[in-house]
Length: 409
Image 1: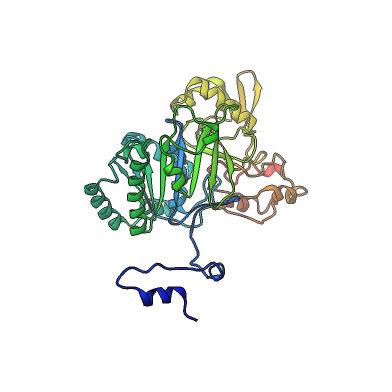
Image 2: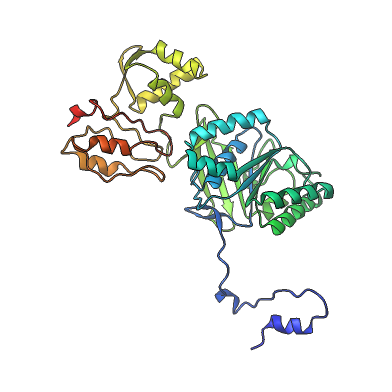
């Protein structure tokens, strides 16, 4: 049977023929599998060749949130609740943050992600950025962009923020259409996926949650729009609202680290957990210490007196230290209270030959963390402790296999 496309081509007189499909056969047609950039439990958030718009108020933390995700994309690691299947090359067009700000943030993120040599190699190759703003839709600029993209060959291009790469009135649909046409041309030519950060107005309309400032054309054109907002009822908490064509609408709950640079994903009500700075402070202190000694160590880390007090409370709530008397503290033996990364079951049980199997049952390690199915015993405890090193979130405290664990069996 001759297809409709074949019939049209037979009658074509020098013009480009559409690839015509029909509604009966197309549903059964085998299509090339679409590669998913960001996945979730609620569906595909961003697919290859799509556009994601991230909106939020100025100075809310959109860029830092995005850098968390870009680290994951470049290294092929899940990040902030988004599933990432493999490493991809990213070019981040930074039109807003100074080189000094970028340097500070990237140092913090390298520490937060606990980058090893293998992942450092991936990030060096895959996460590239340009500290410059320019108008994408200007023809003379477009030529330079095409040359650079041809050289770098990224999978994902990030535009942060829209206003520094856009020449036109944000309220004018015609100006926004010219910008999006230029972006789409680049996407087709270089097989790109694009992420665009866009500011919201001073007061965001609850009925128009996902639109940025000005024309709604960008939100309409995007495959997925993500909106970052402060939680009005909980200081320090944020909500990430996600809506897209290939996923159900959902919300991620985030908490900002005390250093105010990166965000953690929360599955439920936040509980105090240790961070890298707190662990480093505690490691520098003797077994028994005073509030004054803690404050001095915190000051060397650049923390204020008030923040140091918050860290002491976090250490107590996390079971890392206990109060002896007012102003005096003692470190809790590491083998007695095991601190696991965010989202991982915690246990305060004392290890013994009788309860070791139950304790092992709750020790579920995240991806990237060394795993062990050994049962603790006086004979194999040193080997098991050796396996429990260098977890993916740098929050597990370990000890040398010495006399500290022997009295527990």
